[in-house]
Image (cartoon, rainbow, N blue to C red; front, side):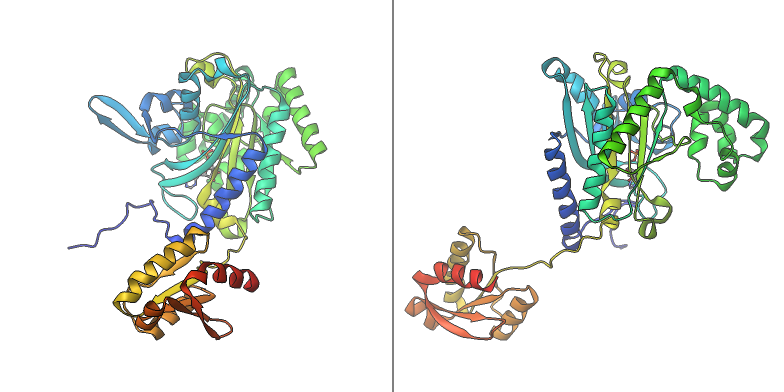
Length: 421
Ligand code: AMP
């Protein structure tokens, strides 16, 4: 029989690796709380129509990357991103009626049937956030600033922020016309995929990684030239705010992103290129001022971002202390095991990380395991110790050993660990 394997593009995260994830997640939760965000959890499965309406029919995600299925006549999809579900939940629970500004963050798995490569998977995790109800560029600037701080905290030294503005629907329509006018005479030099995009979604050609498209796009007009005055003012104020915060950024007038819902501010943060190569986009985000109304809610402006957790973990330079237990309980013989079980429970009750060896292995094997787990002390108990209500406490670094009475053990271990730290 063939060995069973995980689905292609979907990864196990084993404990050593997960410790790195947890550090990034903890830093994320800390940052978000500092900025007034609260965590939200929405389902992994949503109605397919939610993503078609929110993300847009002619996007790569909706066209070819969704895991969709029909269950009892219901068309369902494994969520490919977090914003659509957050907006649905925001509307469904009447949140806009109960608070003027809502700041939510989330962490969870997303699903896209993409070609797997380093930093690109079919099940991947995103840490993301949404701000509902604040249309001012200060919230855009705060979001970018918090991301730069968070990336610095997790040890991504070379984060580069790129910002652009997509204006409103009218500006995008004007830009689309200008872009099509520019691209049409050059259509034969585009990749076949982009040739088709010219009809369906020309803005996406700007995002192509195909060298033929990159060359043509380099001379394309800038969307910043066709923005309405209010959109230009929003963008200019955002830039002032970022300057005031001392957050470095580049203006990237040809930046577009794979999801159709953005209006005005759009941004991307790249980093750790040496480790991630072409997949070095850590964060993507932007304003989506029309989505809440388009999905049946009131007219509420919003801005959000999502960052790939796997990419953040790869990008993070932060080193981790090895997995460590404080005390290793090494029982000898049957009576020692039950005695050790209770000792270990009592040590954990006061916050001392303790592992009990229940293998009935030799003392030598147990002490070897204690050292490999980084335990400072081993608590040894055989028949004699059980009979006299004592234990042997061995300091695995100093290599010294002493007899401690059972009733003093917890206090003695606290003292010893404190002295050793
Ligand atoms: P998006 O939701 O497409 O705007 O992507 C936001 C971020 O999610 C990207 O910058 C990546 O860090 C991450 N991401 C998107 N797709 C994938 C994927 N297939 N595998 C891993 N990370 C991804």
